[in-house]
Length: 194
Image (tube, helix red, strand yellow):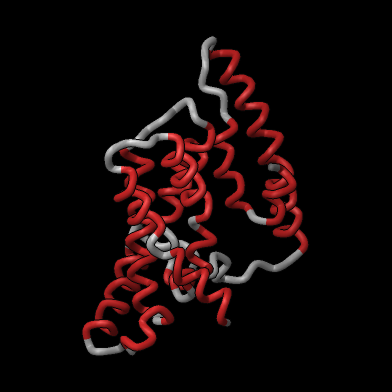
């Protein structure tokens, strides 16, 4: 995780899946603290070195983060307006970016809702996925510009959702599966034809 964090700092959020939440609490807390330091200290040292050696740009965040659900709502409104004003060529609806935006929002919000409703503190996969939910909800407008960038940000949520759903087959399973994965056909078609 320490090496992965050097390439992409949000990898540290996945630490939630590695934490031990067992008794005795003091022992597991000490182990969690040691693991957190091993994962975070190399990144902190690297960032300190870069800040020391290179001048920092004023807009260092790159508009990647925003208020919770603000960029999501703006993008959904833009896509909905385009769809409502006749922006879809219904003969080629399966290639429409605006329709895919709506499906992506529905899918990932369904995945987030499923993870929050079906809590499983003992599962490292669930903990890893649920930690990314607040991060996803705060993603900025720049990431919402391209659908595949957004789905890459939500990949830990998607993995935790699908693995958790497969482990819990209940009466509502088909509905959750369809809602949580309705954006997948567009991605498959995109890869095949483009």
